[in-house]
Image 1: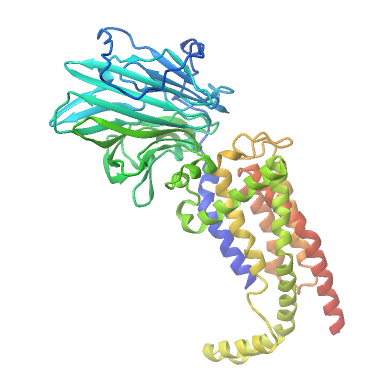
Image 2: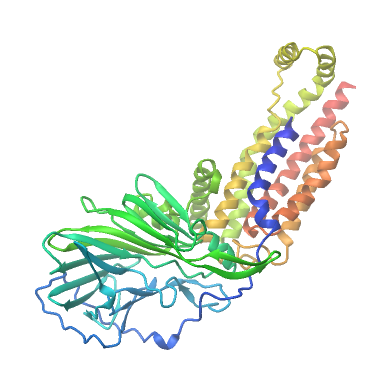
Length: 557
């Protein structure tokens, strides 16, 4: 009974993850989609700040000639360096200073989220049947470069064209990836209209495994609940209209997120989101030849604009960091769901595990590798009493095994009677048929949760430990997976001491460690570390249980 249940759980894990293990695409790009940032295009940052005054259209702006070349205004804080173009006030660069890119062309450079020549935060205004795109406007900035200090900073763009006036104000906050966007458009008509907000056509990949990163690219929205639309589900040119109203909507990669937030009380929400699939890109070669994946999709949001022309929303450009997003509320932390198709079961456990690991890391001031070791020991220590009860249940089960065999032979043609008699036998001898497998099943949700945690949690991205360069990626020397497999073999071997001979069980002792080692070779080294420690800590208890089993058997002879 125990072996069948455990095997079923393992098969579920295999079905969920084995395809990506057996057929992983090669990581060598055929046509790179990113390039090395041009350092010459990033001027030094001065300490000047704008006044932070509210947007006023009464101040007549200076309009640049239509033929003037666009300039980039750089905004630097301890967390990021953002570049805004004077051509429509769009965001053309977003470097996150606390995170390094792992792609070969960008290695050791700060993460850059905005792809080259594909700006995000592109504004357009509809009035009746007319649409005016600000991308053709040359706007005048309030400063050439800005440093965000402890009190924050602001940047304002102003422009005028054919009797219409526009003002955009970006407000920046210290220690936040959130940017407040406020604007006003006058002279576009007396009936109001709709703001069309373009959030670009995807993010720039910054991971060593670009194919894995592309598989996580998705449009994420929050109306009544959070929903995700994978870019890979869109065909080139295919359009989907997502109905709101949305509190927020954005684009995510594996570890990073850009989104527009309409979360203020009594403020208009985004009415709809239009997603258009981009061309599929040949990025890598696999065992079946070249493969094309979806890496781009244009996302446009609509926001009602009243006759006065005022509008506002917030912008988030930063990491998918659980605590930071949870602090903003409105289920933003759900933009990075755990579990895939198993999400209803895995998400609660994953969130709990993440919070525990982060809390241990902060309170104990230990590296995440040591936190995982301690966590693995604690999980097994908490299960120690249950393992003791499982051993007692197993001994009682062995004692009634001959009686069960007699009943099975006697009532083999009467299944209902056999079931009743077996239940009576269990009750008389105080046997729980599931008591032996429950302690073995309890660690499985944690193991499942950690698989998704290491695949999606930015806190472990690039975190080294001993010889491991990154706990979220596979061990480059395969040391930890081999230790995990050996510990699993020893644990199984010790567990068979004193157990009646069973050819099937003997085969599993050798087969499962080998199979699990091969399966875990490409899994995150942090997951392997936890599982290996959990097995090693269980060996002494398993040995004590086996010795007691032998004593029980000796006392009956």
